Image (spheres, rainbow, N blue to C red):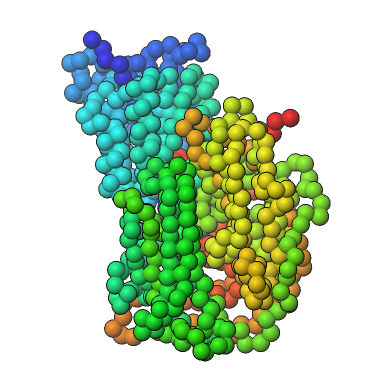
Length: 629
């Protein structure tokens, strides 16, 4: 008896290091291995009547290949082509895997010809293929898989979901996104388990046209997971041995209920901003997560300062959570308080959760120099408003997956985007001293739209939340904030920090302000929602405060700090083409600002966002979202 086999398409990608601003175009793309399974069940007629399921899969793959940038690094592996589906061939068929084209600059005709030669014949070892795909790639960086199957694994053991768990437990950053091609309940459950275990997504496809469309959307959407960026650092569980962190961005991992200690040296007049951003893959943590930061001063003095933020949908929607602690007691001129002396300060970071999975945490250390003269214009009290409605047509953009890869919005106007279920997208607007912004987000209506939470949040340059709004989306057009007023800042002034309004005090830092747009996760299949982002920017640039020199004191010979050389840094202004589509990833890290912040100078790893789609993210022009009439 010929057992039912499944067809599998696997697309994997690896994040790369951006060595310099002058890197070649090829260096901006993650290597990709395409793995194609040729199985006996794919000989069946497709529901659309235009050929077999294998024909449909080939067309879907060819369409995906056509969309790859010319500089993409792509290879091809096939299995099942060397054996049939007879019982006597099972042992050999489950080992039949061949790399027919090594990873290299994509040769589209050759790649499509290789796909075309594949014949529907053999068995489908989904579990084994996951192991093979993971093992064939370098051992570091993000790896993503897109799997299209018309049935269950025919070679288990190993069971595919167990392999997914195994890879996840090994610490491999592997997201598997699965598409069920005319599958039954058992196969759907297996594929959904693989996706859920690795923080991926599951999609259904009932015919050839749907398969091509779904695969195209999965590749085009560039599943923009939050990829942690920073220099590795390992906090200690003892404050006396905490690693010294110079200003810069770092990455650690925290377990449930775990506390870690990090040290920062401060000089007279300096202000410290210490931000922790925890990154949660969907399905791997509990819904309620908290990130808590406390500070102690020289000699272990309790500074009586604590900041704590919650994420109440971490398991359902994934995403991130940022907590920021600002310490300015050395800058206010009052020397009668606790912890107002120069020296070594220790930050305790605690992840408060009853789960078990470790999660990455970005740690941003910013030190603002003291002021030595004027502090700029008086504080502002009035929020920015929309003076005029933006033009009806929106300029297409493609949001980034993190603070580090936020897409630059070059100025006021309307921007169009498609956000997919489960995505959290980041954009940024440059605010110099004297300028402010207002924005709103409109989610378009879609047929059979799923009921999920939607949210938008505005952050300042040190990742401190200024304002947010959230509500339920049911498939009907709706706008955030729901009260009819935009989310807005005042004009950004240094003296805003001295006011009584806690939110306005957060508008005392110039630089990149971050707009985050989120669409909750859905278990009901693929698709996305068109969004419009209306942005107003008001005010004229004015002189800011006069800063003195600052720097991190040299450590003593007995210390072994985790640092990078410090420097004074001032970014270029935001860029963007006002008339063309925007694909403006941050060319600098999330700590950039026009302030002369003391900042670490070492290069950081820029993690590309998952799937073969990470290739397309930077290489294709975004399409104008379609809005219902």
